[in-house]
Length: 71
Image (cartoon, rainbow, N blue to C red):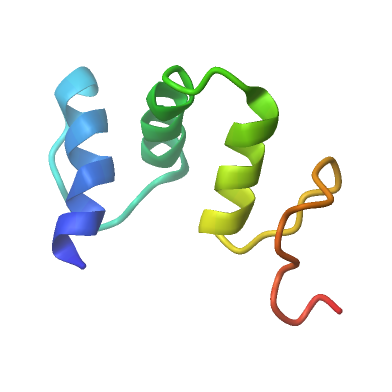
């Protein structure tokens, strides 16, 4: 789990000069996925990937998995 957390923090901190604290901030999360999205050619595929990876429902993507407990 620490390696997973560090993936977000290390990327953000390399660019912004911060230190790892074991907490993923919204800024760290957005910074990481901004760079991930740049390598994906299709917005619909990125949306599908994110909705499935984070188990969230996407109103714009009927192929996404619904959020557990939302139905």
